[in-house]
Image (cartoon, rainbow, N blue to C red; front, side):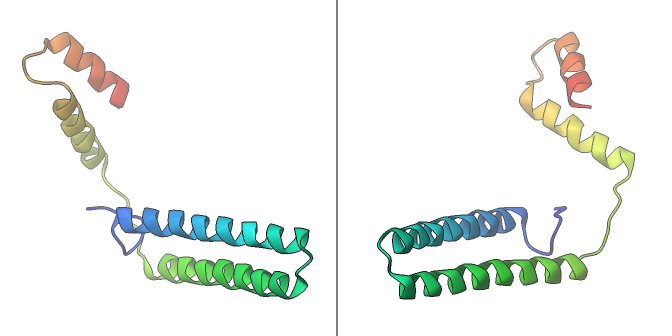
Length: 106
């Protein structure tokens, strides 16, 4: 499996979405603290936002520097597109429709 980080792709996507959700909830807490004029809570929330965003950035940079670049050959790309077209279009469909789908994918 080819991924852009050292984790599996679903784990990276869930980490991104989870961080976004956490920052959204903390931003709602910041809005609440400003509206209710609870400045002590507001300071805590701002520190939390900075720490979460900073930690995410540090982890992102660590994985970025630890990963290696892989340039896939053209044949590798076409093979995956061909397998997707084969999976989407059953073998009993006509050859013209399969050729049309291959043209759209590649």
